[in-house]
Length: 554
Image (cartoon, rainbow, N blue to C red; front, side, top):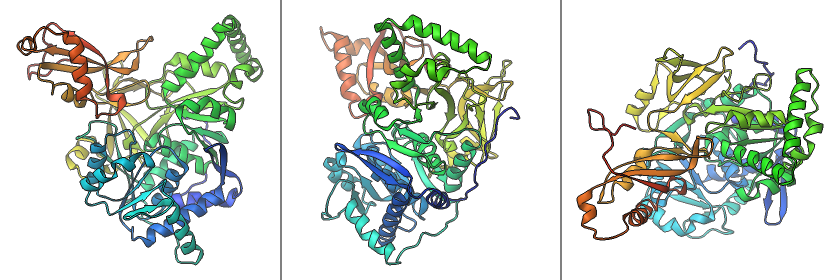
C-alpha cells in the first residue's frame, strides 16, 4: 500500500485512555449535540467524561464487576453513556437490535448471560414478559423513568447517585486486560441461529487507530445509523472520540434533511440506501427545476478542470451542497454494495464518497477507500492492522475474502463449532467473495451462497424466513430472495417464491389462493422485524430444481 497516504495517529491502548486524552486536548469542545423536544442540548467532552464516571460509579456500587450488561433502545445520548461506561469497566456490553421481536430479545438476553438491562420506554409494555422469560436478569434500568419503581431503577437517579460517589472519591476507573471479552454483538441473521460475536477492547481500539491511519474524518458528524451495530458504534462513536469530533445525534430518519440544516455536519456515515435517496432527490429536484442539463454540463466542465489541477467544485455545486447544510464534504458508505455511479456522482460535486467494507466479526472495519486512493467500484484498501487474502481463487482472481489481525474477534459466544469453522490459524473466513485490484483495493463480487444484503444494509438469511413460510400447510417449497430495484441491485423488499401442494390447495375450496397466501404469509411472519416481511409473492407451477441431496438450487 505504498500509494496510500498515511496519517499520524496517537497510539492508545484503552478506551479510557482515548477518552482522557480527548478531554485533556479539548475539554470544552462539544462532544455531542442532540435534540430534546424543541431545543438542542450541547455536551462537552469534559461533561460527557464526567457522566461516564457517574454512571460507572453507580454501576460499580450495584456490584456489576464481571457482569454482562445489555442495552436496547433508540439512538440516544443516554445509550451512548452506557456504551462508553461499560466498555471502560470490567463488565461486558451486549447491545440489542431495537427492531427484534420480544421473543428474540429474550433469547439474546438469555444466551448472552446478561444480568442487567438498560431499556427505553418503548419496551415498558413488554417488561413483564421479559422479566418472566429472563430469570437471570436481576436489574432493570429505565432510561425514561424519573424515579425508581419496585425492581426497576431510574437512569437519571442512578446518575445522581453515581455523581456523589465519584466526587466523594469512592470510585476510580481502573485499567483492565484489553484482550478479554468486552462486547457481544449479535449478528442480524437467523433468530435461533444468531451468532454472538465476541469482541475485545483491543479489537475496538485497533479499529480506531487503524482507520485513522488511512483516512481523515470531519470535525462535525451527523450520526444516523443504529448504535447496536458495530458500523456506527465503532466507526462513529469510538473513532469520533479519538478524532475529537462533535457527534450530532439524528433523532429520526424523517428528520435527516432538517438536521443537516440544523447541525451543518462535515461528515455522515451511511448505508447505500441513504446515498441512493440523496442522489435521486438531487436529480429529481434538478429535473423539476429544469436544471438537470446544466448540472450535467457543470460536472463535465468541473471534471476537465480537475484534470488540469483546477478544483472549482465548491463554487460550481454550492447550491446542491447547500441542501446538506452547506458544510458536508465527506460521506462514508458501508453495510451493503454501493453503486459506483452514485459514488462517482458525489465525488464529482465535491462530496468525498468513500466506500468501505466491514463485518461484525472484524469489529467491523476491514477496508475503506481513502482520500488519496478512491475508487467507488471498490471497497478500498485494508486498514493498517488488518491483513487480507483471497482463498480458493478462480482464474479471474475471485475467491473468498479472509481477514487476519488485531480487529478479528475472539470467536462466537458459547459456540466452539462455529468458531472453529470461521477461524483458521487466526484467519477469519468472511463468506464474502471478491478480488484484490492491482492497486491493492478490494472488490466485492458476491456474498456467501444464500446470504444477501438489502439496499438499506440489512442482512437477510433467507432460510429463517422460509421456515415461517413453510409453516403454512399448503406451502410445499419456498425460497426467499430480494426484489431488484431499477438498477438491477437488491432493493429493500423481499420476494417469496413458492410451490404449493396441489392436494392441500384443492381442499381449501374455490378461493383466491394468491390473496389467501399473502394473508397467511403476513400472519406467519408478523413477529419478524419489518425488514424481514414479505412484500411480493411468486407462485411456481412446478417444483424447484434440486441437488442430489434434495436441496433447492438457488
